[in-house]
Image 1 (cartoon, rainbow over the protein chains, first blue to last red):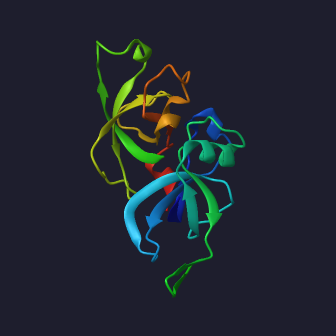
Image 2 (cartoon, helix red, strand yellow):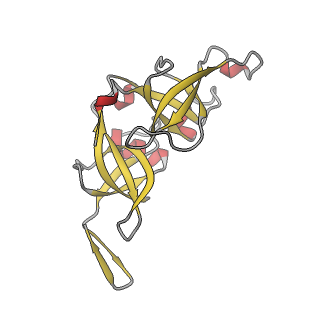
Image 3 (cartoon, each protein chain N blue to C red):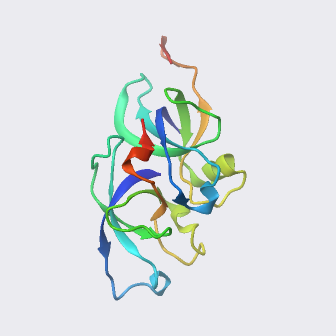
Length: 96
Length: 90
């Protein structure tokens, strides 16, 4: 799983039918220290995350499909599975 | 999944029979500012995308799920068309 920040979302009328009623969020990967990386990714929201939230994204298709749509076997490779409150790193704490 | 711009089409006369009838498109992955990032790759289309359109694609084994799963060998499939550049909010 990766740590990321929710930047926004996208609107697509024409899409795979398993994406109906799903929110596709644009996210940017963060380091554990909270610094931004160059990697951005689209993930389906399974936890009602909001813009600015630091989140946990699973990047394994079976898990992502199941958590985001209720059943596996969809063309989904990333899903937001948690909102991170804080990360403790060897004594130092990085608040959200 | 990643945002990308369709920048071309691929014509391959000789190909695995499971790819017959599929559209192959060249996609350039984009970052949050819709600027190119990384090298272009070839994707199988599942939604009727065209050159110039802003799309998003799925990677890995799941890329073959829009098709009959064991039938289409792909690790990169276009699964949605973003309505316009303005429909990416961040």
